[in-house]
Length: 389
Image (cartoon, rainbow, N blue to C red; front, side, top):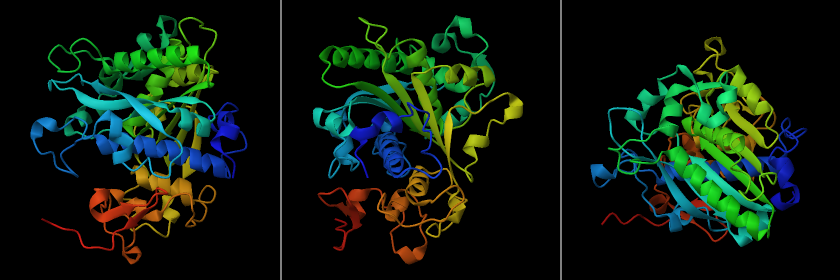
């Protein structure tokens, strides 16, 4: 098993993942899990008032942890050589009567030690999926529209989902963190700053990796196209020095029409890898007959075959079920094995998803209450009773 540093370009799709997808290459399994966990971090930090109730309703939509300790709080520091510093939280305002600003994403960059382990300086963007009831109204605005800000006026035939485009680009004078700037503006500004800074240093080769789950995957695809089509992956001093941009996404819905997908296929510096579960309805919500088309390359899972899951159909869209499939499935529609890629107990992080004979408390997140993490980053159930005082 090689280091990411040895073959990061291949793992990031520089050769369209040729020969790596079926059977799924072991290094690519670890690579996908790595970015899936970073996608999970944006969900974990978001206060939705459900799993872990907000102390005050006004906190809903905001982060529960600060940027400096996000990865430590969600268990991505111990035993993990791929270290990042979170530079920005990104807020968006939906184009709805609700005048709110919600946490949508974070932008991070690998540390020096993390860059050595990754083989390059990696700018990481992780987008959140639908978490609030009001955001369901955004998802329902399925009419296709042009996206000149993203793909340029010359590509007017490339059309995308109106609701997600509006959320991505909307500025609202009555929204606290979006009075003059959209979440798109925030992400592009952060990327511009980091690309300029680290291109000038020239201590490591540079990459941009974008991830997300569900509608977060849709935003990841939109922002990946935006970054490449508008040359934000190049330093302003040398626009010919573009870095590779890769989107690794989970349970992604279709985002745009055939012209949008075709345009993406012509972008040599943007590669998209979609991980889809056969049981997950999300990738099928916008059918082809309504002019929506699939985009990028695909890793296919079918978690109905997992002997570990209690009700595989009920939780097919959950990120931890996706990561379980990546870790354990042996070939498309193949058998599942308990492997060292990811402990199966993590399926129950926010679910009651594992069969009862595994004796794992359901919805073990908050992890600090029911689990303990050792110095190697491995989670285990606590043996000592929880003090309820």
